[in-house]
Amino acid sequence: MLITWLALKDLWRERFYLFCNCALLVGILVPLLVLFGVKNGVYSALIGEMMENPAYLQIDTAGNVTLSEDDLAPLRGWTEIAFMTPKVRTQFDYMNVRQNSGRRIRQAVIVPSGTGDPTLPPGARLDNSNVAVSALLARQLELTPGASVQLISQAEGRPRQLVLDMRVGLVLEDRALGGRAVLVPFETLDLIEAFYDAYALPDYGIESGKDIAGRVPAYSGARIYARDLEALPGLQTRIEVQLGVTTHARTADVTSLLRLGRNLTLALSLTAAIATLGLAAALTLSFWSEVARKRRVLASLAMLGLTRRQLALFPVVQALVAAALGLVLSFLLYGIAGRMAQHWFGQGLPGGRNLSVISMGQAVMISLAVLCIVALAAAVAAWRAQRSDPALVLREVS
Image (cartoon, rainbow, N blue to C red; front, side, top):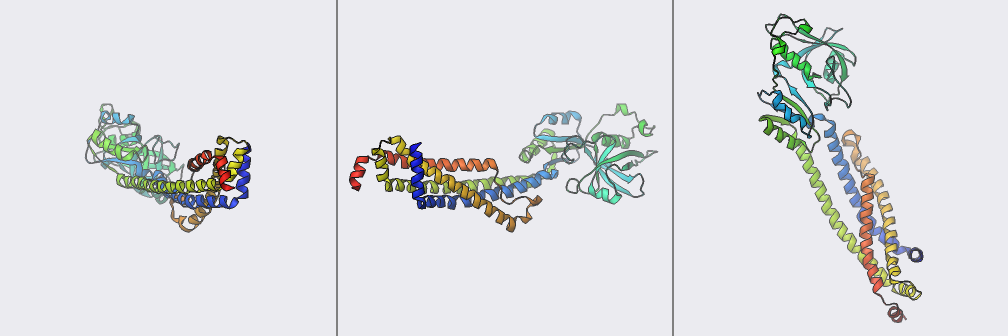
C-alpha cells in the first residue's frame, strides 16, 4: 500500500523520533517485564517445591475415632481428593523389618498406600508382595530394589509371630517419606490388624483364633491427599464436617503461600495499570505532536489525492513500527537483565529454577496488549490528521 511505504520512508528519514518513541517504550516495559518475570519465577519455584513434596497435600485424621466403610464411601467421589486410603489403629502400624539375608532388625511404621499415592513415583504400583521403603530404613538395613525383606509382628497371647515375606519394589527419597517407614497396600495393614485382633490366618500358618469371615473392618481414620494446593483448605474443612473429626494438614503454610501469590499479583497489576496509563498518555502526546509537526507533509499528500482514511493510517503505521521495535528491544534487554539477576540472586531457589520466567504465551499476550495501547494512542493522532484541512494548512505554512 502506498501510504504504508510513504509512512515507513518518512519514519526512516526522521529516525531520531523513532528512537525516542522506542526509548519511551523500553524505559517503561523493561522494568515491568523484570518485575513480572521475577514474580513468576519466585512464586513458581515456591509452588513447585510444595507440589513436589506430597506432605503439603496430605490430610490426616486425628484423635480416637472409629470409621466404617459407609463413613468413607461418600469421600471417594469427591473431585478434590486425589488419593485416599483408610488407616488402622495406630498401635498396630509398627512392625519389625529385616532383610532375609541379614541380621539387623529395625522397627518401622507401616503406612497404608495404593495406586495413585502421591508419595510414590508416577506410575508406581504396590501389591501384596511389593513394598516401598523410606531412604533411612533402606540405608540402615542396606536395602535395594529387589531385595527380600520380612515384616515381623508379635501380638500378646498369640502363639506364633506374623511373618510377611515381601520384596522391596521402591526406595523412596528422604523428602517423599521420612524416618523408618514402609509403604504397603491397605489390605496388608488390615491383615496385620486382624492378627492383633486374634483372628485366625491359615494362609500364614496361624490356625488358632476367631473366624476371619465374621470380621467387620473398622478404621481409625483416613490418609487423604488433595488434588492441588488450592483445593487443600476447603477440602480439610469439608472432611472435618463430613466425618466429624479433627484433621492435621499444612494448610497454614499453603494458605500463606497462596495469599502471597495473590498479593504479588495485585501489587504487580496495580503497578502495571499505573505504568500503562503513563505510557498511553506519553505516547498519545508524542504521536499528536508528530502529526502537528508533519501537518504540511500530510496536507501535501492530501492534495495529491490521498483520502482522509489513508492519511489516518500514516501515524498508525509509524506508531505500530515503533511499538514492534520497542517490544523487540524490551524483550532483549529483559533477557539480559534476567540472566544477570539469575547469576547474582538465583542460586538459592529450590530445584535450581530460574529467578525470572515469562512463558511464550505470556510474552505474546504482553506484546498484543502493548500493540493495542499504541494503536489506541495513534488513533487519537489519526483523528487529528483527518480533521486537518489541507488547503488551510498549506496557506498557513506558506
